[in-house]
Image 1 (tube, rainbow, N blue to C red):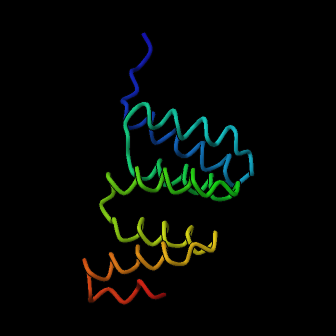
Image 2 (spheres, helix red, strand yellow):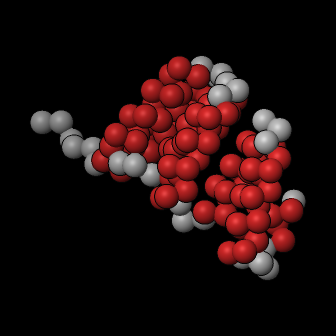
Length: 116
């Protein structure tokens, strides 16, 4: 009888495999792994990885879409918001980036890392 692998272990395996593919610039397989991980259990890190992948491919809209999904699940929403702002800056959407950064400062005025 085969030993059962719990969902969390399988999900972590898929994320690790996706990261390996991402570092090897094998974007198709990286995306497949991250999506498999999300089917097992939606979690912020896998969405952030997909956003990073879309960003590397120059898909600004896709990156923002995945970062917004990550934002809903994140334990550290400020970091995800900073990533969203960075995507806006990269795409020269400076007003949108400013709006996101202002939101972070309103929520955490003491967080000066926003301007880094």
